[in-house]
Image (tube, rainbow, N blue to C red):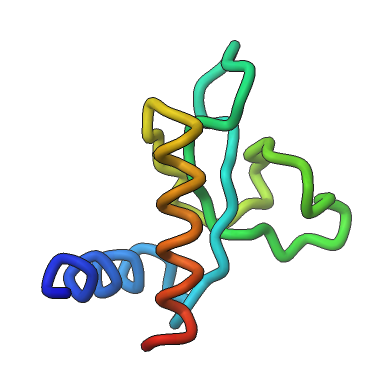
Length: 84
């Protein structure tokens, strides 16, 4: 659990949001699947199912090199939102 606590503190310092909701995101051009993660964009014009990262999107957008790893990390980070 120490790694999760350290990651939560780092992400808090980076996002300035207590517990952001996370989503998979296209962080590398040309991939068929979203291979990165990013906080959910609060902009009303950004569709929740759109995995693109636009200037309106909060940081950080993190490349994971695998859509399966990205999906797994999103599940973990969103599960931790309720546990913190």
